[in-house]
Length: 425
View 1 (cartoon, rainbow, N blue to C red):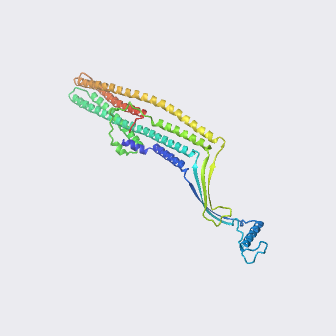
View 2 (tube, rainbow, N blue to C red):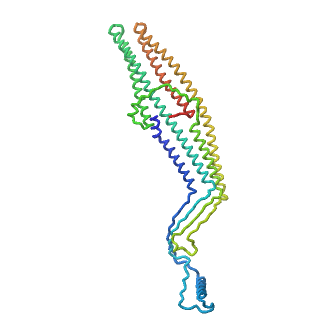
View 3 (cartoon, rainbow, N blue to C red):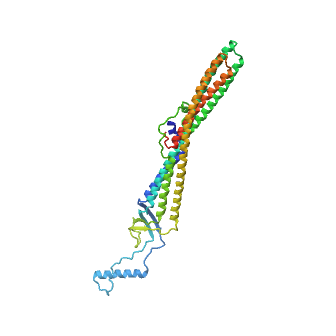
């Protein structure tokens, strides 16, 4: 369990899926942010070649109108001359040539035509699909670590078998030495035992090589130090479980289903582009001095945007997303068939491994009894040394086969649990 957790934390592929999920979460926030008001600060300075003013006729009209108003206020008859000494206000410019502006704009979407809401739902299902993909990736990593851990256990079990064979050979070597000293055997028998020991040493060398290789593989998968991995002493034990009758939906299948839902909402999002959008717009000027006579200090308005015809682009994009969803549906159907087949295959493999273990246990019993019998016959000069070494070799092979059967049994049960979606780690 500890090695698997370290392997999951170390995995680059799992981390990439985590980043993909974070991006999907950001997409959701972007979809929600559509309904938040957008505020923009603006600042500018403009220098015109000259002030923008009224034409001469309009200016004369405005001055004349001002004189009439002054006469009326002073009670002077309409046809009387305008009294001297009364100042008149100059006609203001429409726009001064030096323009300094500072303002704020606001845009606030009130209704997006369901485009934002469908985008949000699509992103949520996309995130769920990515999370299930990450879980499926974790399953694959866990399977690799379990397999290599069991391989290491098989290597250690093989060494124990070799150690047992070595003890048998040492016992035979001691007997051969005594037999030669008493003139009951020839030196050729000792050489046969020495050859068997050399062959055993070669097998032990293979054990060390396999052990080194598997520790390196586990180090790369989990980032655990080689020093700690060397201290491991994994054991191959028959695997039993009570949960084989249950089954759950595989993470790969869940990921495809969520991806299919995401494409459905993406299709709706594309189609909703033809629905009218409603928004509020506002503007406020902080500096009034340089405003023209026609410019307001502030305004607020409600607007509608309706894309009546976009050249069928939204309709075609929506149809494209629907086809993508149909592709996912085909993948789902294919995945269901493959998973059903993998479950049957795993069940048959598990049953075969159990039967094979029972057969090998009988073989070991027979090989052990045969070795003991021939060993007694050899010590009574009723069997040759070759018979003893052959019987020892058969016993060794049977013990190897037993450990291999335990390994195969664990591989079969792990494959079955994974196929049924109930692999826990």
